[in-house]
Image (cartoon, rainbow, N blue to C red; front, side, top):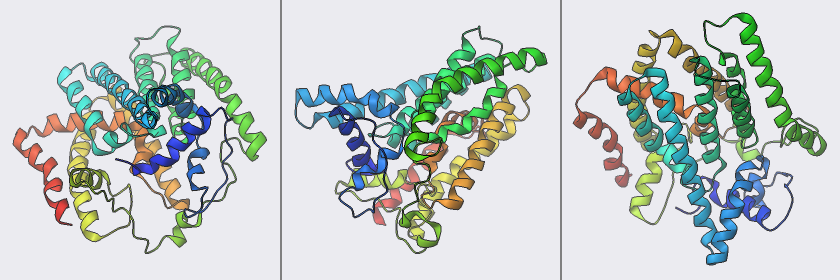
Length: 364
């Protein structure tokens, strides 16, 4: 599925590092500029560095295979994310049925499929975010040892080194202790985690200050005009085309309303059909979780932080995308699984609900 999700930009970053060049500095260019492929340079380098060995192996085997090898790296990150989401759901609910449906919701939601099958730093972001939340869950369930807070800090720092949207998970370190823990124990856990996390991201902060004058990559760089809210009115987007009908159907189904808030009414309506079904499950799962305080506090805090960040970002940047929620995909999957079980509808109903958009989209 070439070109989807700005894949050429992300692949260009991998090629840049594979050629022996240093961590690049982002400079904004127009979408029609010959330098537009530098657009992914605004991201931290961890995903791209991790993909370099696979890219080199692919190119060594056959010219052009580097792309497919890097895609396999994203698939691997997606599989790991699914495993940890399954474990996290089982620890929280102690029910394998919920854990299995969490795995399905995590792995087969359209956006998750897209971002864990193409060249995109979102694949590693999803993986590291789940691993972070999994370790926080273990700490909260009193199943941790002295190394667990350190591992939490390592995975959280690695997520920040992958994509900056993961910073919304930082306040969740307050949950790295059992609810019954004394204040002193909570404080020790938070301090230990905070110090480790700070030391791990310090090189990123120093490098960004030296190159951008801000403590994060791309700081101070003005947004491109086409992404400013006042310039984006009337823009036609969201329509994803591909010469192969099956790919076209899949891609356009995956383009949720949050992926592009503009476009034709029909496209938004069909996307909204899938989204509405998911929201029903999610809402029901949220109701179920509120009856279990040990379960709901962490999940609700994650959703609140991510939604606040989503709204704040949308005020200044018109590239409002559902993948902004990537750091909490596992939380959404768990709540969806709880809602699925609570509604207890026949399987054929879920199948029709899921497949209905696919039946209509080819005629748009």
